[in-house]
Amino acid sequence: MSGGAPESAKLSVLDGVAMLVGIVVGIGIFGFPPMVAANVDDSFQYMAVWVAGGLVMLVGALCYAELGSAYPSAGGEYHYLTRAYGRWLGMLFAWARGTVIQTGAIAAVAFIYGEYANQLVPLGEYGEGLHAAIAVVALTILNLAGTVQSNWMQRVFTVLALAGVLAVIVAALAGAAGVGNVTPVPVTGESSPSGTLGMAMVFVLLTYGGWNEAAYLSGEMRDVKRDMRRVLVLGTLVVVALYVAVNLAFLSIFGLQGLRDSTAVAADVMQAVVGPASAVLLSLIVCFTALSTINGSIFTGARVYFALGQDIPALQRLSTWSTRGLTPVTALLVQCVITLGLIAFGSLSHGSGVQTMVAYTAPVFWLFMLLVAASLIILRRRDGAQPRPFRVPLYPVTPLILCLACAGLVYSSVMYAGIGGLVGLAVLASGVPFMLKYRRADASARSPEASSLPKTTSPEPAKHVVSEHPL
Image (tube, rainbow, N blue to C red):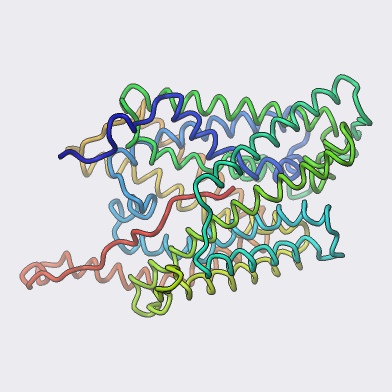
């Protein structure tokens, strides 16, 4: 019997486009536009980086679609990095995901939740951080009890997110037509001293985050050779159209300076155009969407720690599993503690908590994205006979473009992210001893002496490492 989903369950082009759009369009569009505005000099640059981000999304999705179709695995990037470079780098990625990428992303979304929740229930000077911490603790307890979101609830929250974006677009069009109290704020100066187009792109691409999930669509298409390219191009066009429309809306309401000054931009749009009641309703939609993202990220993130505990003897306690709630208890608790520490760090740092968390995660995230892009070239050369149901067009130009884009983003995030970026890199460096251990083990396994010894069973890769970007 052949593997894979039955033909009747395969995705059509329309199904694939809807799924890709639903994955990408999320909470980030309600939190990152003010930070993008702070890192550009004028409205033209502001809109240009959103279009450029869509092009990077398309290139990245094409590359991930080939990797996913050639090497289908629940491990995602972990699996590609391990095949291309060895288990030692795969383990370093798992370490980075568990200590920097996933926890930093959870904290960033929690801060976006906190910005909107604090509009509804003010908690003082550190209200955003307090709301963020309360959300993380409450949802960790929910996961400890063994309760997770069902598929239908996830669909409801996706619809709410899309409805929120469309409501903002409609409200802004009404504002541009003269409805409501709309007064764009004139630009009072240039972007912030640390502002660069590179950092603007960091925030833009976080808003476009999720395109790497295209790797998992490739195994479910009816005709992957014909349909995959259509799904990625059409899906990217839909997402770019939505984001361009909503950002034109923001500019028409606030102007560039007003957008820089906003702390809850979508609620401010509704407040200016429709009134306080609509602003409260949109804030509630954003909060529930953020909670959905945080809960899903806590669930998948804990599995990263669980996998590390299985593969690294020194971290074996992380693999403790509750038979009652069917949850990785120790992993959830460790993840919660690290995330709360990051929330405290973000709350006490200069600037917004969201921006601090982006600075913490960005250098590490884009470094590994660069390595994944390069792995496509490495695996093409090494595994020439490997079946590839989908091949990236214009190879090797396409993966090289992604490599260059990722290298530029690593440079920008290291040079301009400040103390947060340095802290993230330091945490990554703390996992190097584990990497070196597995690199030596791989070298020993390839040595002539080792080849003459009886074979032993090596640990399975961390199958629970799920490729997901929650923003």
